[in-house]
Length: 320
Image (cartoon, rainbow, N blue to C red; front, side, top):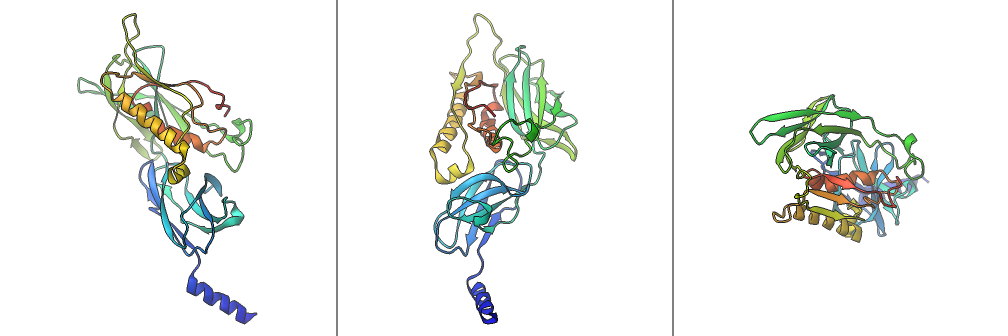
């Protein structure tokens, strides 16, 4: 028996145990790219998964990795406001029993990074509603708006506590292995705006650790309603969202969602069309009760929803 143990130890020394490295381990801003590098895998089929440290909460469904004992792949990630890590598993799913190697932990430097900007219309053409997300409440959440005259006005808003697993009615939304904290939602009303005018702005405010601000954005206020007013809008439905494993495998869902956002961005930059708003008529993210999908969806639409009001309708897939 001792000889067998010694032989096993020698084999392990020669061939080495599988390794998995996620780099960089600290990310600065969302979205970001993590490089997964592995070595020491035996022959076979493998997939990788991304997990939250909550513990062991799967965030990224199993994705096939290139064959070979060693290799690497780049994976897109967003700031989930908690640490996360990766696993490589044997077979076609990444259940705990099939994990052969676990990576180091990865996290974003600031969980209160202002994310998910979205403009919405109100019943006043001189007022827009602006919302964004962070890990904690801000006191207060703010939008700093640059006026065309050269001045700056700061609008204060309110923070709303996250919904919890008890607020969810059905699986998978109320599953303890799938639910995670969606963060604080902040709402700021931007008043006294000039219809048809563009403004530079930043959003953020006083986090528990100090002031935090987003990069600069530009918003466009829709024209004032009237009989002679012409309004151009971008309208689409059934978009879905580009989730990481589709970006690795090139799945059709990734292409459709990615192309929809790029198309909307292109139209917003068309001087002749000059769209004033986006109308997403339903079947928005296809989350179907999986809360992490909304993280990716809100990140995906940010380049559009931060520019013009993003209005949504309810489809048959919005039951969560």
